[in-house]
Length: 418
Image (cartoon, one colour):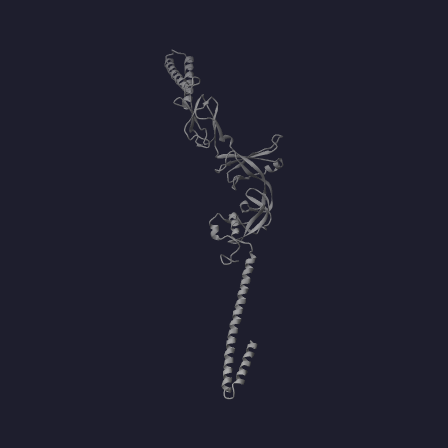
């Protein structure tokens, strides 16, 4: 600013020296006015320039501040509240407390001992299906007719002939007993004869009623003994079957047994075992024994060279997707426990052999944290390193947060900037 004023002063003197005597005063005044005007403009421009410069510097400080805020959350993943609302999403605090050790094994799902019934033929004949819907897997009700055994043209052990013979024997025995009963009042027949006639009548009646109950029009009806589903059919339509031949098997799958086998070293822990968790092999669904209204039925107390493992059997109610004959991962809780940080298994994401959880930084911002896993009870997993226990992590919907990390880093012009 001083330099500019100095230049203006020199110009004013120059004007004065070149003006002559007659115009010296006027020129001097003109030069002074011009200098004042220039000085005022320069001063005004200078103030604006300084203010402009100050504004630019201030703006630069704000930009630095913004960069600082972004750097605090470098690598964070934005997952908006709108996105969260479209899925099953939850964030919870890490659980810090007693962690119960579990024995991991594989359990076999099987029907309860009284929940599987094999049906056999009760007479010789030709097996005839009761309808086209009699197939393996069909749901049936107790007493529902599924097959018939028809004597047809068989000459030996023909059910129809047996039915006719039983009916005739019953009619004759009944008539004979009623006749002797009337004569007994007049003492024409002895008590012994009357008792013999009565016995013959009752035997004929029981035999006839049994055949009549299990036959329709001279053929035997084969019904489901319990409600459940047909697990196996051992015959074909029109096949000859003999007395005692297996026809089909019905399984009641509402109550099931899950039997797991464990090593002998865990024998001392079984006495304190009260619960277990079961994970389906074809998915991530995990059930606790309490969820299935189950209970521990028994566990093995001895081993042999042929069977070196201890069986542990649980009784559970089928939630609808447990299939008899299938296997499930079984986590049997023990009495041993220790303090640990644990998270739900659904919170853990595997990526190229490493494991991560997503920590909540803000309601719509998350950070991927590498963790080291310990033991699991099927529902929760112990965290050995990576978490302090004070974090809030994504417990449901973590896979969607993982997918969101591929959409790029934070955008300062969209969403929140922290």
